[in-house]
Length: 227
Image (cartoon, rainbow, N blue to C red):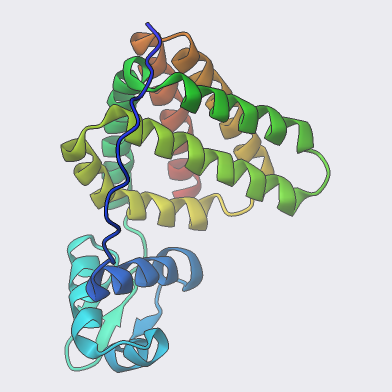
């Protein structure tokens, strides 16, 4: 049955802690900008981010706990090369959790959100075929929008927390092993359309199946390229 989300009073905006800000910026550097094998200096990062060493150190420790950086005694940190087993495990966790979240979202997502997703999907689809870079950027934006909407609609903070621990490892794999493969992005975009149809049908089992099939398709592509 379609859901309507009640509007709640605007909450007070809380500024993120410096350590959290440092973490987000370092994730972008490690996952998107810097190649494996790069060394990170706490002092240099503090200068780059315009922060003291304390929040940067806290952020680096968090990245280390997620396997995104490795400490080098008396030197700093290293961005390690991807491990096949660690990447495979992260991908398997993502498939299981995102499939379940899609199942929850099919029953909980509101009609307005679905309409907005459909509008963006239709607009994105109509604009494809003009320029490869623009096409990939547009499909990436819809990817983030859809997965984010499902995560929010599912409303399961515990699963979101578990997913967050593997998401950056998965994103590293996507960056290094998929890169700008337009055909892979188009296949994912088409799979996103199937997921959206399942959400619109309010069919939890179908939504879970569509999401798991999508994530598995990406997983197979990544792991085949790894080898």
